[in-house]
Length: 465
Image (cartoon, rainbow, N blue to C red):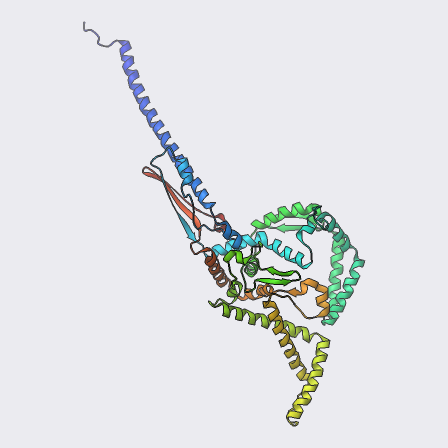
C-alpha cells in the first residue's frame, strides 16, 4: 500500500493558502484603488478651493471706483493647493486668468450695480433737494428729526385730509392758467377725485415684482419689511431692456469724472465724486473730462468740452425761449423794444423797409433767450445751479426741484449716444484708470502623476447675462 503524502488536514491547509492569497491580492487592489480615489479627491478639492481663493482676489478699488468685478494680478496663486496636497509630493498646480473684460461684461456690471444702488442714489438726491438727509428719517434718537414711524402716518393723515389740498390746488390752477393749461385742469381734478375715491375704497395695493407679490398698505411703516423682501425679488427679476438702458445712462452720468472739480454751495464748494462718495481725484489724481468724452468721443479734452458746452447751450436756448414765450411780462417788454426797433429800421431805410413790431417781438425774445442761455451755460460749467425753467411761480413752487446742475444735462444728452458706443467709451476710461489686463475668470489645472483635474470658472454675474 502506497503511503499518502498528504493527509486530509494538509489538503485543507493548501486550499486555505490559495484562497487567502486571492483575498490578499483582491484587498490590495481595493486598498490601492481606495488610496488612488482619496488622492483624486484631495486633488479635486485642492484645485477647487485654490480657484475660489483666486476668484476672491478681485480688485476692491475697481469695485468701489466703477462697480466692476475683475481680476488683474493675483498673489499666492497656489498657496491653498500646496497646503492641501502636502502628502502628495508629485502634485502640481497651474492656472491662468481668462475672459478679457468686454462691453457685455461691463453692461452686466452696470445692471447689477445700479439695481442695487440706483434707487438709493436717486432717493438721496431727492432728499437733498428737499433739504432732508437720510439720518432725519432713521428714527435714531441721537439724530435730529423724527423717525419713519412718526413721519409716514403723519403723511398719510395729510393725504387723507382733502381740505389741506385746497391751497395746493389753488396754486396749481394759477400756474396752469399762467402757462396756458387751464383747459387741462378739469381733467386733472377729475383724476384727483378718482384717486381720492380709490384711496378711500382700498388703501392697500398688491406690489408685483418679478415672480413675487406682496400686499402692502402704501403708508404703513410695518410693511417696510415686506417691501424689502419684494425688492429682493426685484433684484433677480428680468427687467425690460429700456430699464437697463436708463440705468446705464444714470451710471454714465454720475460715475465718471467731468471738467468740474466741484459744485458751488452756500458753504463753499462740494468736491465732485462718484455714487459712493469717492472723490474722482482719489481715483486718478488729477481732474479728467470723462463725461464729456462719453458724450463726444474725441481724443481732445478741449473738443469734448467745447462740444458738450454747445449742446448744453442749445438745450438752454430751447428752454429759455420756451419760458419767455410763455411769460407775458417778457413778451410785453419784447414788444416795447420791437416797436422802437421798427421805427429805427424805418428811419434808417428811409421808409423802404417796414417790419411790424409784432414780428420783431419774436426776434427780440430770441435775442433775450440767447443771452440768457449763454449766461446759463457759463454758470453750469462753473459749477453753479440754474433754474430749469424761468417762470417765477413754477420755480418758487418746485423749489430745489426746479434747479439743475451740470451733470443733469448729460442724463438727456447721453441717451443719444448708441449703447455699444457708450459702453466702449466707458470701458476705455476704466482701462485707463485700472489697466487693460482685466479678466473675469480663471482656468486652473491640478496634475497628479498621469492624471489631472481641470476647473474653469467665471464670476456668476457674467454667466447670468
